[in-house]
Amino acid sequence: MSEVTQSAGRETADAEADGDVVPTIDSSEPTFREKLEALWTVVRFRPWTIGLILALKAVAALFEGVGLTFLLPIIEVAQDGGTLQEDATGPVTYFVEAYELIGVTATFETLLVGLAAIMTLRYGVSFLIGWIQAAVTQAYMASLRRDAYESLLAAEVGYLDHADGDEITNTIITEARTSARLIGDILSVIEKGLFAAVYATVALVLSPTLTLLSIFVLGTVVVLSRYALAPGYEIGDRVAAANERIQSLVNAGTRGLYEVKLFTMQPTLATEYDRAHNRLVDTFVTLERNQVALSALTKLLNAFVIFALVYLAIAYLTLSFAALGVFLFAMFRLSPLISGLNNTLYSIDGALPHLVRTQRLIAAFDRHTESSGTVPAPNPTTTLKMDDVTFQYDQDDAGTAITDVSLHLERGETIALAGPSGAGKSTVVSLLAGLYEPDEGTIRANGTDLSTLDRHSWYERVTVVPQQPFLFTGTLRYNVAIADPAASDDAIKHACELSQVSAFLETLPNGLDTELGDDGVRLSGGQRQRIAIARALLTDADILILDEATSELDSPTETAILDALEATDRAYATIVIGHWLSTVRDADRIYTVVDGEIVESGTHRELIARETHYATLYEPQVEPTHSP
Image (cartoon, rainbow, N blue to C red; front, side):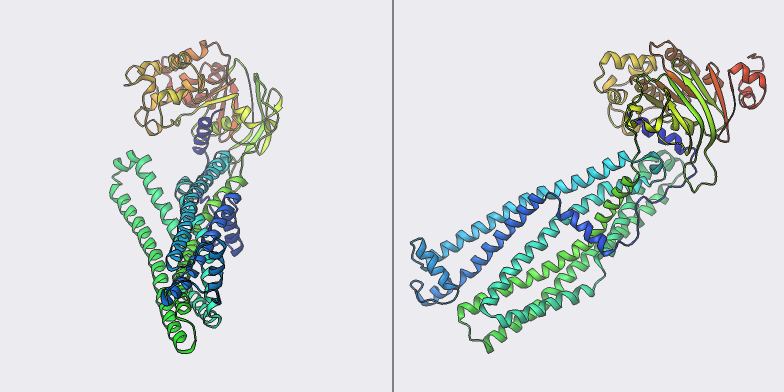
């Protein structure tokens, strides 16, 4: 059975389930451990690539340090003229030895060339880092979305019945995109940390006392500034909630377009959208304001620290002019790094809720993965039997959907389920299709318990045509051939003839290649049902379930389709659900379902003769002169 059949089963089941839509994602505040685990999943994504990026960042930091210390000999040579002296002391001696090793005199010009070479390497490595990092970020976003989407497709229908579709859509599309930002932020923190370590090391070599003092003061500034603002996680969580609300309103305006217009809901929805969007904008502005405030405050305080260092260095230390210049340059580079590091950590805190939401969604789906046996479904399936089956959609519901239901079906037979709306008919066929598992009782195919069968192999044996079929965005050809993408044009056209799609096919601008729009928006209800029947006939299924599948067709079209199904070469075991007499009267056996129980069964004539439930339901549809 194709994925559209699963969707159909869910739609029909939804019509009879009483459960309300509930949030799919746990919205409670995550623990510190959960936050760390979420970040760890980011760090361990493609570990070899992440390791390469970190190694390149370390190389870039090393080149930055070498480039910074190049200023010492350059300033000394610029002051004294000539070349570096062999009796030079401190870090300058390394440059003397390095230039001697390559046989070049360390003059002002050659030192500048050396600095240019080092900085070229440094920024060349930075370019390579940026390139690889961008690719990893996009790959991580794609991986998150793929994991969430595959988990969604693998989740059991019973769980998805009560899930919040807008929340799911928003998480997979929007939250995953924001989550991917964390890779760049985490790597940026590491990069800034490496560069800060390089600058601090250079400064320590030149003046340990002032360096330790400045690190202590800068660290204190960072800690105090973080406590002065609202936590980034709290604001990021509000952004995620606002995104979800906007997603919900956009879906309401597109998928519920007719209702919106006919019930003049435009002003109400527009007001709600403005309110939700303003909330999102306000939250974004708050987040950006806090990041800017954090950066500005840190930079201001760092500037005061630098001014103090300049005074202390000149007043109390006996550093050379070159050493003092390099020390102050290192501190000037270190200060914005500390500010940027603080800002990036705040950004991580703001993006973390999006990642936690995405991971919680995946975890929720994984906890409710559709169960499956290992036994291949019998091919062909010739008998299907339901014995004393009881089923309840939600354990919190007050009552069961069906109780002690038993029926049987053989290949070549047609049975019908009749009864009032909400009686449990669609629940029965959803259970037979394998979309749900019974709470009590068994369902057997060729004598084998359905719960032991491989679920996907069973779906291939069953095809369902629901009352309101879902059509994918794409062409008519694609929608008919989803069960068999390799089907020939002749096979597709034959299915269209049997289902009466051919009756309107010629009116479509591009025939089978006509785009149908979102969920077949350009088609009538009857045309959609005919397409659903056509694709069902293109499957290799043994069991055909028609769940009010012709409810929107006129009587001649319905009769033509039912006659074509009877005349087809394939001997289906057919289950028909219908409110109308014409749909079910020719069935080999009719089961009347009332309040979740089968209260009677027999042929049309037998049930009419009993003058009980079936007769009560269907006699009003018969002309007074009609005789059964």
